[in-house]
Image (cartoon, rainbow, N blue to C red; front, side, top):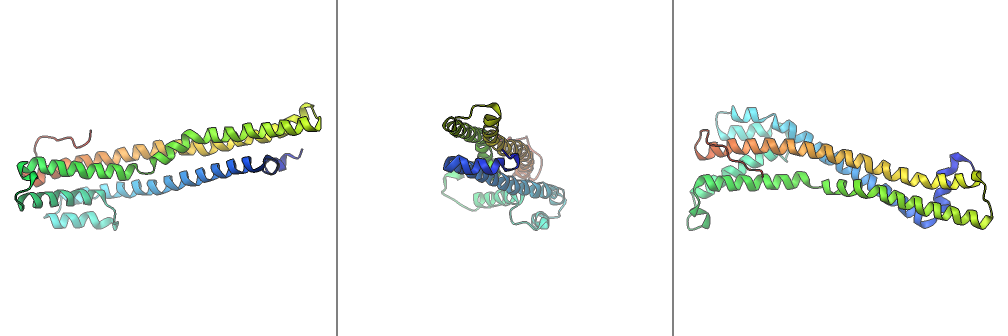
Length: 232
């Protein structure tokens, strides 16, 4: 059998099952690389935005500080969103009456608002990771299914033709094993990408947590207070 035509022979002789399995693996690969590219750019952008926090705290007033966070020319800035959330919470608490949150002091209200904002950011940064986790855990088994089906079809073909020598068996079986390799080729980048993005997310969320602590002190007292954990 011509080894150069092995994959093509597998595609043709495997029938709809092998073709469908290969298409599923291809779709998984496209989905995983798309998620890694999009989320990777999001983390890269947020890391650049985190460097602007120095300019934020060295601004003469809050308006200038918020403008400093816009220097990255990005619409999605979790640090700016966090600062605005704290500002809005402070204004809302001080200029409203007859609301349930009026029973909370400003410190508790600001803390709750900033924690909610960080939870929203965590959800935003975590979106898509479930796709990588699912692909990383299932792609090898999808490839294995293709291999088992390919071997089954190859053995049926060999049995029907009466061929039994090792050189006649090795070709079709070897072709079927390619599906397992395809499954691993899809799963390994997904797993590595998942771990890399998870570490990147933890870095950004850590920066947000520290920024929220400083913001709470600024909005409530204008000075440093005891540390409050916004992430559990």
